[in-house]
Amino acid sequence: MTRKPFALPKSQGTRLGQRLSDFLAHEMSGGLVLMAAAALALILDNSALSWLYDGFRDAPGIVQIGPLRLDKPLVLWINDGLMAIFFLFVGLEIKKAVIEGELSSWRKASLPLVAALGGMLVPAAIFLLVNRDIAAFQRGWAIPTATDIAFALGVLALLGKRVPAALHIFLLALAIIDDLGAIVIIALFYTAKLSLAALGIAALAGTALIALNLKGVTRIAPYILIGVIMWIAVLKSGVHATLAGVMVAMAIPLGSSDVGSASPLKTLEHNLAPWVTFAVLPLFAFANAGVSLAGLAWADLAAPLTLGIALGLFLGKQAGVFALSALAIKLGLAALPEGVNWRQLYGVAVLAGIGFTMSLFIGTLAFDDPALGDQVRLGVLAGSIASAVLGYAVLRWATGVQKTSS
Image (cartoon, rainbow, N blue to C red):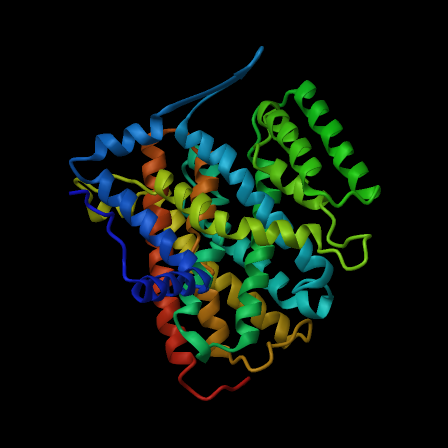
C-alpha cells in the first residue's frame, strides 16, 4: 500500500500559513530571527558540535574565471559578499530617507542627526578611555558606535501600539544616520593597502552607473550587473567590498521617467527586504556570533577590549544619544517629537546601544586575531543584551505613564 505524504487539513494549513505570513510581516519578526540565529551559534559553539560550527565557518569556497580567482572561507563570503547585499539595502533606505523620507528636511533630520552624532562620539571616547594604554586595541574604537536597526526596532515592536508613531520614526531615522556613519567610518578607517588598478576599474564601473542614472534607465538588471563588476573590483582594491553595495544604491533612480511606472529604488528595496531580514542578516549573525564560553569568568568581561565595547554600547550610546538630543532641544536646534516624552526618548537612547550586526561587522574589520575576535563578540553581546533589556524596561514603564514633554 502506497503511503500518501503527510498534509495538514486544508483549513488547518490555511490558518498555519496565515499565521506564518502574519509573523513574517510583523516588525519584530526580523529581530526575533536574528536573535535565534545568534543563540544557535552560541549553543553550537559551546556544545559537542562545535567542530560542525567551525567547519561551517571555515568551509572553502572558490570561484575562478580565467586568471580571476576568489578563494575565501565561507565566513568571508558571507561577510564580504552577502553583507554587500545588506549595504545595498541600507543605501537604498538612506537615499529614500534623504530625498523624501525621515531625513528630507532639517526639521525632520535635526534631532536624529544630533542624536546619532552623540551616539558615535561618546561610545568611541569611552572605548578609547578604557583602552588608552593598549595601542593595538585602539583600532576597535568604532565597534561600539553602531546601532542594529533590526534588533532595536524588534524590541520597540514588542511594546505594540503603546509606542507613539513619532518615537518609532525617530529611532528609524537615528539608525539610518548611524548606518551612514558606519559606512563613512569603514571607508575612511578600515581599508587595507590600496590597489590603484582595481580602484580604477571600480571608478569606471561607478561612472557607468552614473551614466545609466542620467540616461533615465529604470531597469534594475543593468545596475546589478555593473554592480557585480564593481564589487569584484572593490574587493581586490583594498577598500571593503560591502561599500560597492552602497555605491550601487546611490545610482538607482528613486523616480521613473515613465508616467505610472513603479519606482526602481522602491521596487528593489521591497524585493530585497525579506531576503535581507530573513537570510542575509541571520546568516551573518550565525557565522559571527559564536564564541566559546568554556571557562569564562567575570575577569574575562573586564578585559579592556571586551569592557570597552560593552561599556561603549551600554553606557556610551545612551549617554551620547540622550545628552546631545536634550541639549539640541533645550537650545532650540531641534524639537521633541510630537507625543513623545523625555522618558520615552531616554528609552530609545538605551535601545540605540544594541550594536549587534554592525558592531560585529566592524569588529571583523578591526581585528583578524581569533582570540581578539572572541573578546569582540563577548563585548558586543554583553553590551547589546544589556541595552535591549534595560531599553525595553524603560520604554514599558515610560509608555505606561501620562505622556508629557516636560
